[in-house]
Image 1: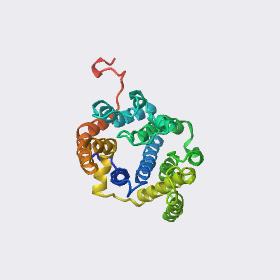
Image 2 (image 1 turned 120 degrees about the horizontal axis):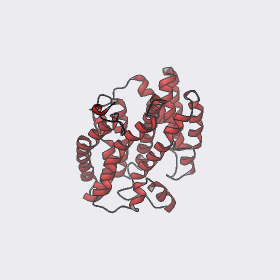
Image 3 (image 1 turned 45 degrees about the horizontal axis):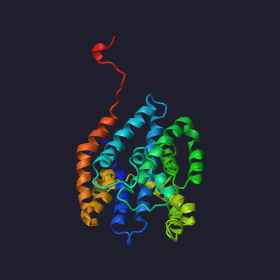
Image 4 (image 1 turned 90 degrees about the vertical axis):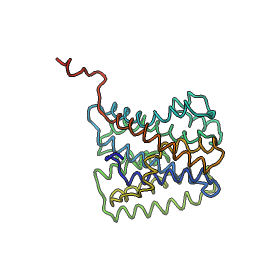
Length: 300
């Protein structure tokens, strides 16, 4: 495992992927586990990406480095899956290549029942990447908190709350009592809104529920980071391989015709993908390089 990885955040990622997989394996027992897991992924992404952008703000190659790293992290396994999948896609290929499949699903009103349904959140992730670097680059760091609070209030699924946590960790470091109070208040709000929502499409859920859910997850994340939690080895293992597991578990479940066997196959595939595809390309993507640099021997 790379020394740069944070075992606590890997464990949080492991919790998120476990929620998603359990919801797809046992939909009657975990009817909202999928959305809870995806929202936890969103919060974690906002925290990590937002923090990375704040740390690199103003540095040379700010945009190029960010998009190169994201491309090497996201695209190889995603594109490979689109090419080699033995099952038909739910939409035209160009929707997936442009990361607009979430718009098509929303406008068509079709249920997310195909094996490729999990890619809707990947499209949202890419759309977040299109906005977040410019937001951090254009807004002074001292003015980011009110901007992020406003965005969080306007957009229930926005990662602004988690980006605010990344700012707090770097520039404020509140007292433990303040963090505990935030966890308790947002936790009560989460239970009252998400826990009591009648359906997944209810106004209560979309109006305040997802915002409270994101606030609760962000508060929990802040508490874990500030308390120095070291994670859990099983959840950490799952978290490291969560991307491959997320992309392939529904494919394997449909292809094998058995949820348990499909998840087992997906665990094997995701482990192999991480070892031989994802990890090497992530390391390569982190290496600085200049497409226009001349070899040292040719330098004048």
